[in-house]
Image 1 (cartoon, each protein chain N blue to C red):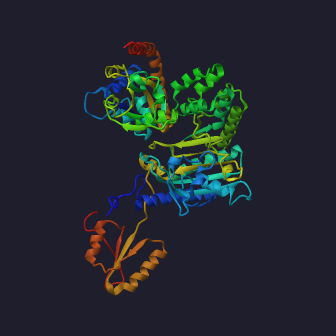
Image 2: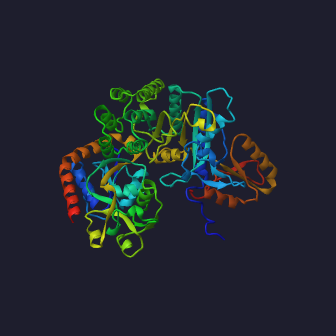
Image 3: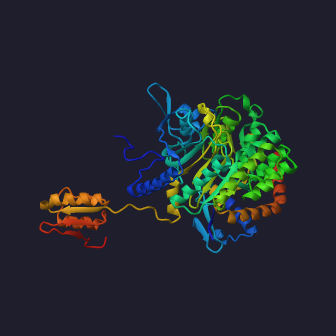
Length: 231
Length: 407
């Protein structure tokens, strides 16, 4: 049996992916092993898991080092790789937004020569330059992005927003929503053909499982969205 | 002294003798295969005018070209692919020729892409172009040659997926999609992003058969069964013609005994302003990227002033070598090279013998600095040469020097 290599984004996404695969009937005990190993293989099930930094998962899959990957849509957008994006797994839900001082609400387009602080330079550029046809200055940051507009490093930021609390506590707000984000299952384009007999049943099993879980997931997301609006 | 003197630029590599030999052998095999089928080899320049690739709506992405200027300030670029220069030649130097034209090439291409996973910025491609035929038999001939080329390199496990861009174009027209929506749908189908496809289908209000086609299109694999299935679902003439065209191509491949390698994938779309009919990609184990790709490009040659329907393919030689290695096949290995040393008194003998050996097809290096017997023994231990021969001072015999320790 061919080994199927699955790249997981280290952390919460990996745990949720493993849980979902187990629900769908795939034995992932190898992946649940508490250890510092980066490659977790189970010869019996023919599954090999690699634990990678989220931003590297699309690369592993595009180059065929992994057949399948589980990774957030934010990372996929930022990395913009040639992959098959076969399933929306639902978990890890949040939104990619343009955020800034609340005073800018509804006036964003009138602000010329914007400076944008972000961990996602590609997404920010794509949104402003391609979609809004506007030239902007991108400032690449690596964390605590909310700080940038507060101390005048940038006018606005592009970042993922879950509850919106950090923004709110710092006097910032969502100005525009770029895209809804959640975890996706991606497949290497060659593996999809060469290992179709193993990959297609896996996608199908996970899809069925997702349908079963969907009602709850949708309800939970709706609750979260309401909470954010009222917060 | 610069900082970079010990390095090669990103995406280019030195090809050392063992790999270089293996690659040349693959090139020979492919060159023979192309010639046997009447595809005449063309060597277009390594440098083209930028305008060649910028013609029409852009035949190569601007960011992907290595660009520089000539002395008149005109923009030049390095050869990006084999097809566009062949199209330029067909439409200009061959403008009054009999059709069809059959060209082949084996050349280095230069693309300013991110390298990695076996992708380089300088890489070798072998390919053919068949220009002046619209027949499905021409498409089948090209697909068959692509499969045979991969096999000639030694790759056995092969999957070819075949699509037809007009199937999608017909649907876009039938559904009356604007350019932006069509472009978005194209991207989603190409990524097999089923969730987003479903959402978009709801947004543009597709129902019934139209919705069913869209949701099945990216996931249907097979041969004739796929065509039978989709024929019951589409109404528009362009899409139906595309399906009939595919049926004809499959028929030819079937007759050639190659059907086992191919599978239809109507969700495979590639670049729509370049390709105009049947398109295909070949896959094998151990490679994250397609081994070969190709298709029909009926509008491309028109950019150079001659309307000529055409189809072709190219196979990546570096990819082929990488796949062979990863699949555990042995690569063609360098032939033996011998070394001949001699006592100073035997120089004339030695030169004569070397000449004879070379005439008989041996590869042999002749000593030029009077190596002693002891030095030759050391050379034998080093293992660079297959065997070390020595002409001694007083015998007519030729002696083979064995390494004293196992190499």
